[in-house]
Structure formats: C-alpha cells, structure tokens
Image 1 (cartoon, helix red, strand yellow):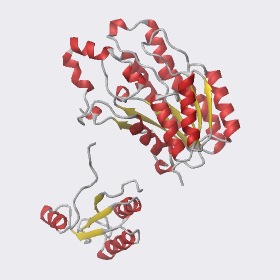
Image 2 (tube, chains in turn orange, blue):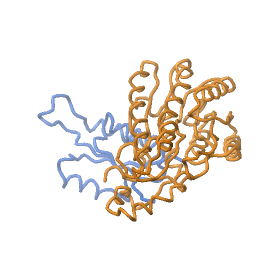
Image 3 (spheres, chains in turn red, cyan):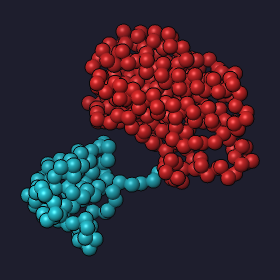
Image 4 (cartoon, chains in turn yellow, red):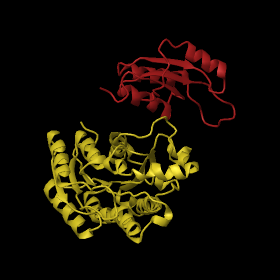
Amino acid sequence: MGRVEGKVAFVTGAARGQGRSHAIRLAEEGADIIAIDVPGDYDSVGYPMGTEAELAETVKHVEALDRRIVATKADVRDLAALKAAVDEGVAQLGRLDIVCANAGICTVQTWDEVTPQVWQDTLDTNLTGVWNTYVAAVPHLIAGGGGSMIATSSTAGIKGLPFLSPYVAAKHGVVGISRSLANELAKHKIRVNTVHPTGVDTPMVAGLGGLDAIIGKEPELGPIFMNTFPIEIVEPRDISNAVLWLASDESRYVTGLELTVDAGNTIR
Amino acid sequence: MGRVEGKVAVITGAARGQGRSHAIRPAQEGADIIAVDPCQQIPTVEYPMATPDDLAETVKEVEALDRRIVARQADVRDPAALQAAFDGVALPVDAGFTAK
C-alpha cells in the first residue's frame, strides 16, 4: 500500500525539476497526477521555461508507474486556465487530495538592477501563482472532505538572501498566504504547509549563473548562501520526500509548518 | 525494504507513550532499538511514571516485529547510568545519522 494510495495530486511546474520529481515520487506511492507547466519563456528570465517535450517526459514517467496523469499546458499567472486544468483533471481522475504549488522563476541581480518587469514577473509567478493555485484547488478539496496543500517556498522565504529581492519577497509572501489559509481552511480538514529547500539541482538553479559573479564583487555576503552540511546543492528527490510526507496522512496534524530541507542553511 | 532498514535507533523514555511509539514505528520499518527508561518514580512528578512492566511491553512489541531490542533501566539525568546502558549494548551504536 503506497503512502498516498488512491489520492490525486495537482502539481504546478511539473515539466521538470522539483515539479517532475514531486509528480513521480507521489505516483510511486500510489497517487494519480494533475500536472501543469509550459507557460512560455519570459523576457525577464535568463533561462528557458519547461517545454511541452519535458511535460510529455513527466507524463511518460508517471504512466510507467501505472498511475494516471492529466497534463495540461497552463500558466499559474492565468487563473482561468489554472481552474480549467484542475477542473478537467478532477473530472477525469475523480477527486483532489494534494496540491503542490511548486511553479516558480528566479532571477539574480543587485537591487538597483531589479527592473519593474522582473519585479512584476517574479511576484506574479511565485506569489500570485501560488495563490491562484490554491484558489483553483480549494473548492475540490472541500468537496472531497479535506486535503493537503504544499507550497514550495525557499531558504529565501526565511532569510533575507541578497541579490534576489523579488524572489525573497515572493517566497516570504508564500509563507504568509499559506499560514493564513492554514487557519482559514482547518475547519475543512485542509492542511497548508510550506517547504523551504536550499539550492536544488534543477534547470532553474542551473540558470542562475550570475550569482557567483555578484558574490565575487561582494564576498562578505557569500557566507549567507552556505549550507551547514558540507554540500552545495541537494537533489529534487530530497524535497519530494518532504512533500510526500506532508501530502500523506502521516502528517495529518501538521499544518502551518515551514519545513526546511536546506542542509542546515537557515540555522547559520 | 523498510524506510530505516538496517539502522539502529536509541530512544529515551521508551517504556510507554511517545517513546514506546517511537520504538515501534522505526521497528516496523526495519530498525533495531536501544530503549532506555528510568522505570521509577521521580518524587516531584505528580502522575505515576513508567514501570519495568511498561518497558517489558515495549520489548515484547518490538520483538513481535522480528526486530532486536536492548532495553535498559537508566535515568537520562545520570550520565554514568546512560553510558552503562550504551556500553552494555552489543549492537553498533548508530542513531541513523549518516551524511551522504
């Protein structure tokens, strides 16, 4: 019996990286998946977004585990598209139990290089996108008698990491809306928690090449990024295992938690 | 394959309550257990504390899962007693912390 057997999970940003890993890990433990991704590239972001081919690869992985998956091309900034994707997924898979509000973008720059577009795109995607995901999903969770929502925050949702100010703002904001909904939705047996990874080996983090150069100019700020464990980066599956626990009934009385999976980064 | 297969876990206060539960749950997932509990009353504590019978019950439940358990009566305030409990243990002491 899988740890989330018979449940249905909605995962945003599921084409690759942490989102794909969450979809696969939950499927390994018996969940069916509603997946969205492929928003199209951003002018303000220096690396490419997840593609249709990558989303198709996620579908292949989940189906290889004999689980069902409904994958849709949708952008978390588009509430109508998000609702349509969740509604269709629930229509096909019968219910909704788990929400992984994972989709996000990241850009690195000093404060004076944050353009209005970078600010808006980051907040729209990483904060409003999580809100939209919750709004689209909650009616289905209520209808099903409860559920577990997990938002991907960051060490940047706890610490004031430099050179990432829009990202830091959004990731702190994710904690706020998650705590608020944890209180508001407890009466519906809906739990809301956040996970806070340190750097994860994903295309997003690989796309942040500029950080080393900036730290080179301001080396006194470099140690803020260091982990306590002698490692620089963790694997997507490390985060997925935390997500799996929060998604499962093993954590049935855990809500409003900021669960760090950060190799000790935030205790430094 | 259990989720903590092949590991050994030390649990203090293992005679009953959360401690017993913490011994049983890892044992279900493949761990062997080192269980410690004072099994005697502390005069300033108003409720009855665990007894040797309680600790024996924890041993029974872990062994019923085909896992090994070494149980010792020792008070966590007494380093010498704790040390003796650990030294008396024939298993390698590894509470499951491995940096990979």
